[in-house]
Image (cartoon, rainbow, N blue to C red; front, side):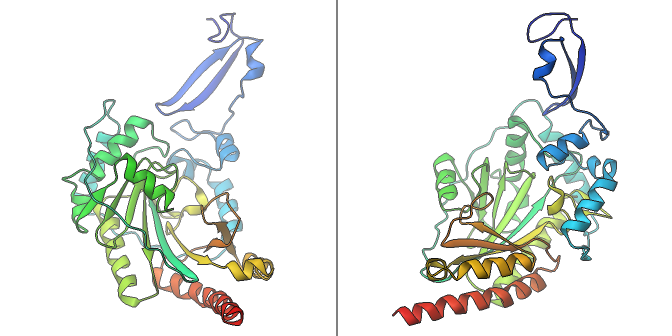
Length: 348
């Protein structure tokens, strides 16, 4: 056996996790210093605990059982031991059959045909402190690893977002972004930079996208805390949750590539524009108080950004009950909004 890098005789066998599954390779004495060896333990699909520790992402749903002792300690610390009431809709035979068919189609080696469904999604320009309230859920299909290769991701979008998709049409009329429209949605911060395909329920419905760390993410953007808007989100979420058999664990709840997103799979964030609090230096005190109370603060572009004056504010631990989560967060956000508005009045 010879080394694939230099063709010398091999002396080291290395295990790798790839988009096509678990594989082994061999290297010589010289080349092995350039290769980082992955050690166990491994889940039944070949994903290792070392890879999780390095990236913070799990490979598949089997990792939750294989690495349970480490994950339980991590999640207890992250969630501060707060209990979570997450109920899984019992999947009927039809939703199980849909899930099995979807997993089969995603695993195909050839790409399924797929075209964008024309439409547009305008982002309102709002001159106020509360720019938007985002409610996002993460869901993963049973029997699939989290990291999908390009063909598998395209096939997933082709099934979920096709012009004949019952998954979307059951919630209302919709559009699917082509390349130029997807670029605009990213510029408007409606979908993340790594989204491959995105779709929107029209009018004023959620945006659904693939290509992020989970198979599917669904995001609603609200302008206010109006009860009718909140109830509409809950109805649509219940429809999506019942359509497929999503990855779910009796101990961890809905499963996600990042264990800290497991549980309800729900993340609520408030987008606030705080130019005066930022410029006068008061925001530093507010930010410190929020972090001590279990909130996470990001910049306008999300993960990895921190510069103001626009901030995304969410909680590290999220309730499964969307109504309760919104109400609890708004109690805190209202104080910040009122302070920014008072500063604006004083300046005028």
